[in-house]
Image (cartoon, rainbow, N blue to C red; front, side, top):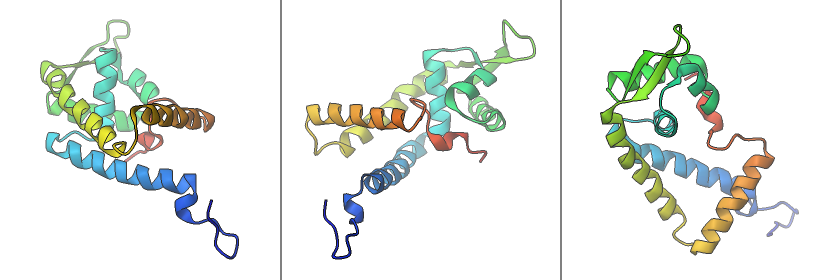
Length: 160
């Protein structure tokens, strides 16, 4: 690790800075890639959650993704307006709605997934396959050590 004459570590030698730098780039680039679809990353996370377990209530989705319930209502409203999901009465709780993917939502998911895969590939292009696997495992371990929920972005719960 390179240090200045004062014993200060350079930013490009600090893991936290490098993760922040790459995270900022990745966030902006992912937003840019999703923009043509009109889907925000938060909405993409909801669509993915429904793809793996369709028919969840808004409350279940909020808990699973760490999205504040008030924000979840807005996200679902937008997805419903765009006909990517629909709300049906929840079979086990008449006060709740089950959120389900529409055919249009199912057809859009592969395009959204490809955007994420391409970004992963481009950002890790300088790494071998083994290095990518190692990096992924190390990052997952670091995230777990920080108490982060797998698959939940910390900013997803923001109210705005």
